[in-house]
Image (cartoon, rainbow, N blue to C red):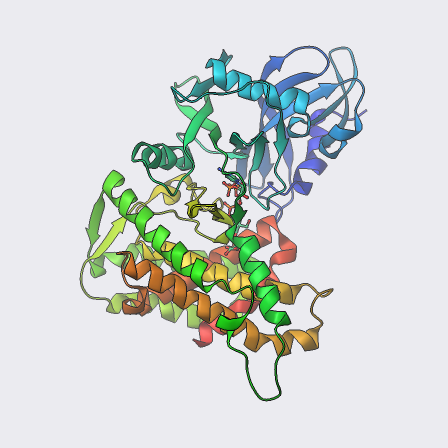
Amino acid sequence: MHSLADLLLSWLPQQRWFAGKDRPVDGVSVVSATELRAGDPGLRHLVLEVRQGPVADRYQLFAGVRSELPDRVRPGLIGRVPLDGGPVHVYDAIHDPELTGLLLAAIESGAEVGPLRFHRVPGVPIDVTLPGAPTSAEQSNSSLIFGDAHICKLFRRLSAGVNPDLEVNLALTRRGSAHVPAVHGWFELVGDDGEPVTLGLLSEFVPGATDGWQLAVTSVRDWFAQPQEPGVFPDPALAGGDFGGEAERLGAATAEVHRDLAAEFGVSEVRPQDLAGLVHAMRAQLAEVAEGVPDLKPYVPAIGAAFDALSGLTGPLPFQRVHGDYHLGQVLRSGTGWVLLDFEGEPARTPQERVAPGHPLRDVAGMLRSFEYAARFLHADENYVTPDAAHALEARSEAWAERNRRAFCRGYAQAGGTDPAAHATLLRALELDKAVYEIRYEAGNRPSWLPVPLRSLAHLTRR
Ligand SMILES: Nc1ncnc2c1ncn2[C@@H]1O[C@H](COP(=O)(O)OP(=O)(O)O)[C@@H](O)[C@H]1O
Ligand SMILES: O=P(O)(O)O[C@H]1O[C@H](CO)[C@@H](O[C@H]2O[C@H](CO)[C@@H](O)[C@H](O)[C@H]2O)[C@H](O)[C@H]1O
């Protein structure tokens, strides 16, 4: 029988949340194990150290332990291992409602178990009988939904310190922002040095909401299905599932959140001549990603030129705390408006980079990239679009992306954000930088999606 570490070697790279799929895993070890429940089923919190070449990343796993495995838990199975004197099944406990409830109970009671500390925001009622079920969302971490009351995000790859998602959400909740779900609690691991490592965030669940990605892709499908009279290109505004109005409102919500972030975390003025560090970082990422993904190489000169053009900017630039990884999957349309999620920054960046102040147009650029993704991602699905049809649909994709880009930027500027139209050089460099990041992200996390950002580079670099 294999050891748990051996089983994890092959199990981890199959998980959506595992961020190192572009490199072989050399070794896995358990560096912290905390028993949250003894018996059958049992629950242990594990911190795993995963070694890949010179890099060692830490991931967390809530490991369920059972002698017999019910079918509902089977999707999380890691394998059978010798433990506590007998062979037992070990599995990812997010699939086991008998165990997920223990997390909510620990937050409710403010429990301390070994190095784990659970916190509850005072005054928030928590019904500990609610079972937690995993979401089916396309995401980098894992989340559990408890009834229609709470959602608990388990950060998978761990980094030292307070996670920026918790830090920013606490600040915006305190400010009474209507555009973030209220924080209900969190939990962390406190190391021997007293430093916390945020492990999870419990937030208000926004019921009946749909995320921006689903809405946008539905709109794109409707638009692709819109009939066309010979020689007359249809107006995307007249398509049944038009997203333009929502894109404009999303732009406005984004500007309001930027205003609140500036008020909470401050604004510093960066002189154009001080942008050299930023350009250097953009160029370094470009070189690194092109090395790993040769298909990026033909675009390197055009992208590099767009970065260099930043040296021609004039006037001080306001830098502030931003979302940092802004896209359509990070926004929910609730019954009352747009809600922003996941202020964790880009998961493929270092913790320092994730919290570094940036120009607010960085988020605008992220969302514009997302419109490009939504407009073209169906092209990568050969069951939906044959290579010939993909060519014919390109004009439709272009029109959809353009309409929603404009609407979003209009909403953003009208609500008081920096006018994107007046900062074309900066916006272009930020958009290309985001596209390069996406190529790295897709190679490491979802290799089958790699053609999506690669294909859109042809358009971006021609603009
Ligand atoms: N407060 C919430 N209410 C309802 N659904 C949510 C909430 N927070 C997250 N979700 C759902 O979970 C998905 C992933 O959340 P997110 O915070 O972006 O996680 P990740 O960091 O793993 O990408 C979202 O796209 C959304 O569908
Ligand atoms: O998991 P996070 O939401 O923190 O962000 C990472 O994963 C995203 C995908 O889940 C990725 O976003 C890219 O794909 C989206 C479609 O799935 C698209 O809307 C985004 O524009 C595109 O960047 C994101 O880059 C990554 O950091």
